[in-house]
Image (cartoon, rainbow, N blue to C red; front, side, top):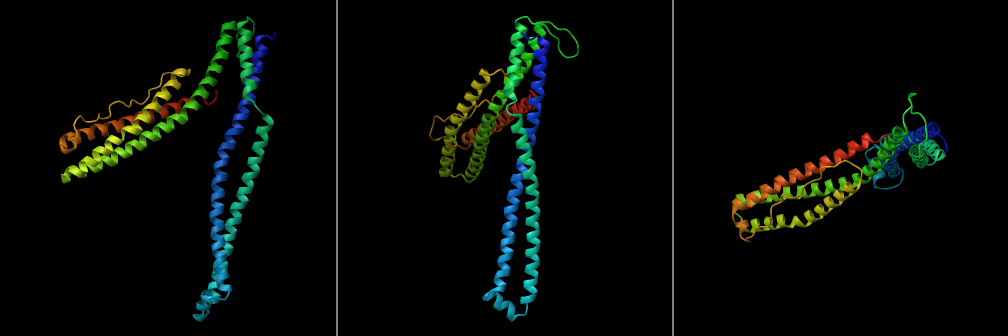
Length: 306
């Protein structure tokens, strides 16, 4: 069996290759938005060029545009101006095409380098696992720095890296769920805000029909609220099953309960109290959902090099 020093050296070599692959992928990911942005810009500039050429064609062919320009003596002047605008628009199109060509060459180079490195993640994790197994079996070796640790230190060193890899994957899996939850709660919050504005107007106008309408709208929020509650439960189950530390999840309790009397909307004070509870609830749950997402993003940043 290879000794621990050799196995650890293999881990470090795999780690270096993995780091190179990740840097290349990051560079490629950062390049793509520039390519997409320039493609959109090219389409816009090409459309502007086509429009300018169409203006020149209208002046060149027989028709109302040419006839009117001929009558007032502006044909030659307008045609010269339109041709100058066509030339300028064409130059702008060529400028963006040249830039896109340069970006395409850079993207192809990065794609080739990434393909040449292949899968750097799997060999790294396999090397870590081999190191842990060998250390547990009682091998001997040294860590970086020239010290001579015991086998348990080597196990800890490798297992910490394995744990960081696992947590990074768990965080990456949770972030989309947290984003979706925040989006749903933000949508609910905006809906409640609209209802609150409607109730304010209704109460001020002493409009019983409006009061019943807006109270019913508030009750209808409970449907999507139940769906959001299910989403929170699913996120909680994912967190509980993971190796991540406890994360504070949004608490969706506290939304105003359905009134026992159908006549509650007729009482301005009772309706206003329900709305105040709903307003406080919406503000709190959105803040809590934002905090959950921010914590996951912080963990992703912390584990970026894992």
